[in-house]
Image (cartoon, rainbow, N blue to C red):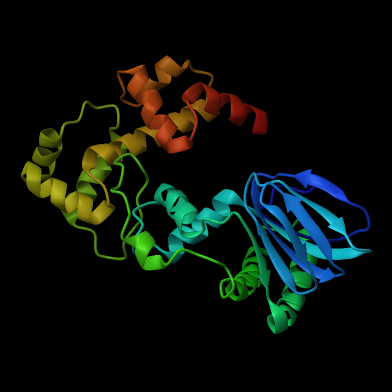
Length: 297
């Protein structure tokens, strides 16, 4: 069994009808030979050689080939795809969680058929090499090459993909929720902000207030809040919440301590509040996180 890869490419042939199937990933299907009718919740579409089909997460798709159908499927982990959206549109996004909502708005059609025409020939060699590398299971070792191949294919797909106009999506961005991770700007870090972050990272269990933190770095409360947010993309107390969530996740992975003990070790007093913030950070509550991690490792 191959190790987990966020990017998997396979070429196969289909001679009989295949019932609809939904996967928890983004699929790009490239028709190499033959033709077929695709069907599912999106309706029914005919595809032919040179077509590329986008199938979003949890979208069921079946196929009825007209003779022998040969196609290459590139399956992309959803989080991996969202991560690329974030870095592509980082100028309007505050964090990677925000990118998920942004992507859903920018790409509202979770099923699309793209007629690549003459450009299909430009992706064939990249697809073949991607399939060959994907089968080796050496994603870590060939990470850069596999990414470059996928990006060369995605660059052509982007010319055909149906999207909502970028300006309309960018202008409707919601404000940042404080507990989310931030993006780093390539700007000098203010010494006071760095000192404040160091204190929060090394003493997360302390009952910090903004006044206490400001006093430690010799700034006024309002000035620290401004400097810190400009440097790290979020207010100091929201930054502290993220640190606590990260440390809590580490304890849940590496120890058998009760959840109640762990949340107090990282500085939280309320289990309800801790669970809410941790869910923002990890997507699940602390108990579920521990159970899932135990199953993985």
